[in-house]
Every structure is written in structure tokens, then in C-alpha cells.
Length: 267
Image (cartoon, rainbow, N blue to C red; front, side, top):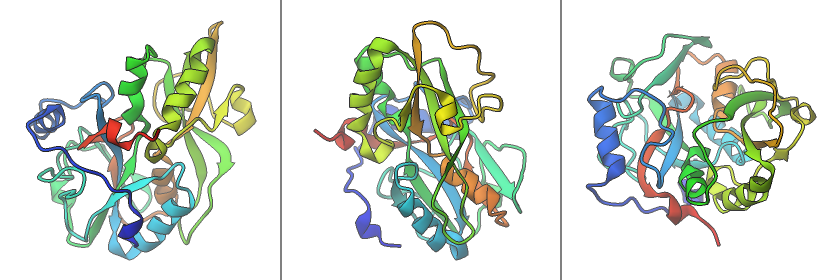
């Protein structure tokens, strides 16, 4: 795993809002979605798996970087993300964790201390929640009309890891689409610009069984479906690989880092 290929990022020293929110999560006082929490800070999708599978998983992410932009990889057994949030603990600082054993989803957990092993490697992968703050600043609401969906678009498989592209669908007003596309394009380490705008059927988006966001109603007049690659994609691939143990953040319960989102923006 070539850590030299990771982007240069600078964690901001505290105290600040990201650290405050993580402390509340660790204390069990916050368990809801990380959306709208610590706006302006980088949020990451989390994937934790045995070291024996980490090489292929890294390569899978590299080949499918639009959906899986890796920002940090820990050493085996290391639960502290030293680049993105020194002092944080990946075993406790997500509000909710999803766990798979031999490919079977277990009950979600509020922490994973009892599952931790010295061979586990953690991947922190850029999340589109990161540009919510920039959207809000531009007058684009982010609190509703969004879902995580499977598609029929394949990813490039590596070893045991393969599966469809997972997307985040947001409904935007027609006049907001271009602005949202331009803003998100400035966040290449958080999925970048939309991969599709318009008819969900064109990418085989499954509106009947959303992975997150509840039932998808009929599209209201004046709104346009806009689709971004989603960091749940590697979760789906790892789930399909039926690993003996795989841990991830529950959808929309991302890990909040100490890196300012603005520092990832390109010109």
C-alpha cells in the first residue's frame, strides 16, 4: 500500500467543533447521522478489515477512486487516525457502526472495542457529506431529498472485491444543479462532480430499495435527480466478498476529522 499516493492534508489543532462532536459521540450523547454535524470539516467513510485482505482492498479503491478516494490507511491494530484526527479513536468516534461476519450483517453497534484485533487495518475514504457546508453557504439545502442507492454500473474488481457502483442521489431545483456540480467538482477527494444528472434508469439506480434515506416518493415538479459516486461502494464490495470480519460506519454516520473541508478544495 503506497501511502505516498495519499493527498497532503493538515489536521487542525483544537479545541474546535469536530473535536467537540467526536467527544459527545464517544460519551454516547450523540448517535444520529453526521449530516449537519461539524459543517466545514472533512468527513470520511470508514472501512475496517483484516490485514490479509487490505492489499487487494487498497487496489480496489485505487482503481475505483471516484467512489473510493482513500485519505488515510492505518497500520494494523492502530485505531488512531494520526493524519486526519490525532487523538481520535476509530473504535468509538463514529456514531454508529455496521458489522459483517462472513458476509452477514450483524446488529449495528455504538462502538467496536470488543471486536478490535491487532490485525485490523482502517481505511478512511472521502465522503460527499464534506461539501454540505459549501452547499449550504451557496444556498443549496442539504437536510432533505437525498438517498443512497445501488446501481447497475459495475466497478472494477480486484481479488475478492467487486460489485456495483453505489450512488448518493440528491433532488435539487433545476437552477441549483449547475452550481452544485461546480462546487462538488472542487472536492475531488470527496467524490467530485456528479456522475449523472437526470433519469435514474440511465444508471440503473434502484429506487425501490434505497440503502439509506427511506422510501423514494414521486419526483416533485421542478426538482432534478443528481447522482454522486458514494463511499458506500467499497462497503458493498467487502460485504459481497464475505470477509470473516468487516466493519464500517453505518450509512450517513461518517467519521468527522480535524481537517478543514476548505483545505481540500481545488481552484
